Length: 593
Ligand SMILES: Nc1ncnc2c1ncn2[C@@H]1O[C@H](COP(=O)(O)OP(=O)(O)OP(=O)(O)O)[C@@H](O)[C@H]1O
Image 1 (tube, helix red, strand yellow):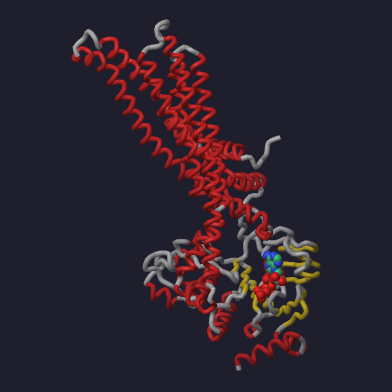
Image 2 (cartoon, helix red, strand yellow):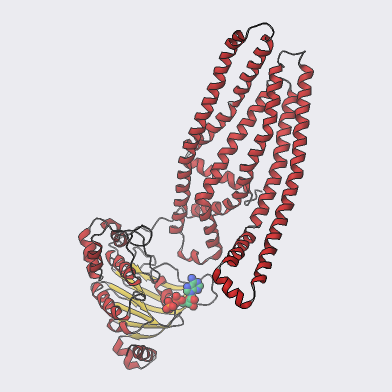
């Protein structure tokens, strides 16, 4: 049984996914450094050849004759170096291309999942945590993983070239000793490196805490307050305690590393000594073993120590960082299971109306009580409905059910007689988005097909009281917000009007406004509300607020309390009823008198 949390399993899974997506690019990116490393073997063989030529001719020939004999292997030697330099440059080019594609691929997979998954999933804490961790992997983290993979391949293949060189001695036991030395040293070094890194990771919270305390201690405002309470020493002790603890843990981990480092050096020295002994023993009995082979293999084995050290670095990093790949794999698995869920295809001609809510109960995943209780409501085509009620009454939840974002726990919601929503209404949410894009984009995102329809955009701006802003900006393509240097800052009210304009631009037959005027001052509020009523003249409008003043002009006012509709009717009817609406209306209107 495979442990799904196993780091290596998760790396393999991600590599497989990347390979499926971009087989050629991945093949090239991994193959070039591999070849670059393996051809080191030919630098060794030419070195062997050069040394052998020099040794065998040193007594008899003049230096010019020797030089003429080594010219050929020297040319091969420099050509291999040139090929390795080119392969290095090519690896960097392909690596960068692959990093960009990999980031784009996984990011779009996550965004796609977020679009497809039921809205309710975002109330599931476990899902949200997993999603956050998966998102954090994509980008820098994944790029780091790919870099480490490529570096590991390159170093690993250069180690292979040493094994290949050992194999040329035609003495099998030498290959075993060389491979054994490499495996043992790599395993020992890798296990300690992983241990040290794990300690580093465990210390990240302590590190952040230490930084926080250290910065706090140097902050003049904090010093002022700590001085009053005479508490600086407490903070100093807290900080001192943390850094001493960190130091001790790191020291323990490093002490192990030194011990293992000594064992590794011992293993390598013994292996080199053994190989040397075996080769010297065969020097007179075989033509395969020459001074050249011995000296080059000796130097190559010495350099393998350094290569193993440099391989443990990317490998241990790869191992540690791949713990996060588990979350990414889990999220991608969920995406696979949603493959069948096609993005809602907008059938603009399909009307959503009337909307019938029949005996609906609703409860959030994270809550154990009903937020909507046995609610019945019918919204007719062309109606303007105001939903009012105190904070937490369930107004926004009811709207989420109307929008089809959440499914009723009991009962049914029908859109034009169907239990599935087939087109999207236009909505202005309480926490609307301030897109740091141009004025045009902020409106056209409501209906991207009309992106170039300047006339319609300007008409919408006029309807939503934003024509002055448009004139002041001098065009539709001016960037809004803080992101761009010189970008135009807007007030909260202006941003809210933009969100309203975006919804109006959509041309939907149902418009929903969840607290559409909360950021707008009371004087402008009534004006905007009256405008919204006009905008919705031929449409159906659902307005939510816990302010009662502007609901007067709605065809029907729904008063909610604790998930139930407690009163329903026109303003006049509810005033006559002298119930909750009457009391709250009078109370709120007294604030403005
Ligand atoms: N995602 C959620 N998970 C769990 N409980 C929620 C969630 N969203 C809202 N609630 C709870 O449901 C109840 C109704 O919230 P809702 O937002 O529908 O009220 P509201 O009438 O729109 O309030 P307000 O006027 O403050 O916006 C509240 O008790 C709230 O805490």
